[in-house]
Structure formats: C-alpha cells, structure tokens
Image (cartoon, rainbow over all chains, first blue to last red; front, side):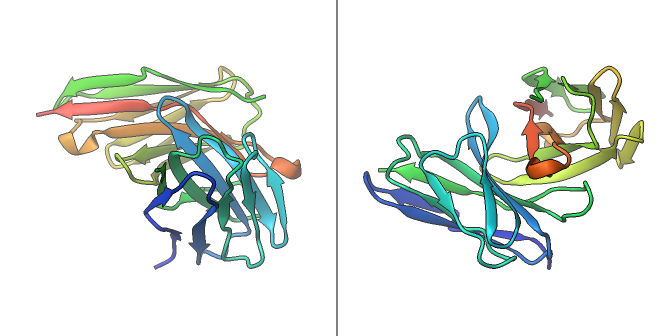
Length: 113
Length: 115
C-alpha cells in the first residue's frame, strides 16, 4: 500500500546525543515536510524539501538537520543543540505541481532521558 | 503571515448530536483548506480537502464548508458517535514560491462524544 512510514515509533535520547528519525514515502511525492507537535501549541514546521538535494528551514529549524538524497526519504536529525527535543514528530508529503492533499505518517515520539 | 484559529478548543457532547467545528484564517488567498483527524498518539488522517473554488465538500457524516471572503471554514459532523472522539485540525497551505505546500495549522478542537 502507498503511504508514509516513520520509524521508530518511540525514541529515547540521552543528553548530548544526536538521534535520527526516519521518514520514507512510496507515494512518488516530490515535497516532504517535518513538523513538531507539542501540547497546546499545534504543529510547527521544522524543515521541508521540494526536490531531491534541496531543503529549506521552517519556523523552528534550530537544533535540527535534514538531508534529501533520495526522493523517497527525508530523515530528520535532532542534534544536541536542540535544548528541548521532547515532542511528537510528524512527517508529511504532497505531490509537486498542484496544491492537493497532504499525507502524514504515524509519527515518532521522542523523549529525552 | 497566515494565522489559523480553531474554536472551540474542546467540545464534549452526548452521542447522536450534530455538531459544528470552526476554523478561521487571516489571509483569504488560499488554494484549499484541509481538515484532519488525530487520535491520541497517532498521526494525522485527512478527512476532507476543500478547494478554494468549492463552497462545500462531503464525506459520509462529515460536511466541510468554506467561505474564503470571510476567512472561515466549518466542519459539520452529523449524528456524532463515540468513535468520532479525537482532535480535529484544520490547515491551509502556502502557495507558490519557496514555501510551496507549507501548511499552517490551527491548534485543534478536542472532541469527546460520550455514550
């Protein structure tokens, strides 16, 4: 079935550690997005990519990094510079060339221990 | 900058009631508006996408309306059921330029339908 797969579902990070969240899609969508969700704050955009080998910062990019080496994959690295990384992370994709429906993965819950 | 507001923040109703969730946005130059459902600890499931040229979109017991000129959308849920309990989010995309497809979300309405 076509869709977006995020892994892992739960992730625990120690202080000072970098961790990488995976997002894979088989929808042949060009554009991919990472959002962060905190209670009471809604979803905020971290990074997005409209084509392979290109990406832009969203509203809260500090402490995060991404890569887009393949159309299907858009991994997010939460670096030690991100001081408050505990949150729910959601990946999304849409096809380029038309404004249409966005599809989301099932999310990754990141907790600092 | 686009801002999206959802009212009410939370709603609790008995089973069988018809209900309306509200979404307002500050910039009326939108291409579409999307309503999502989110269950606790889960991702977002798309419910309805209403294009800017449409005034209504229906799926089963759900009906979404859009009034671009006033910057408002409503999601109508008919004959609510306990299984409808979830958080409902509306979102509008930025169009064109380098921020293509970037979604701005409301903070959501937490719906509880009790038996």
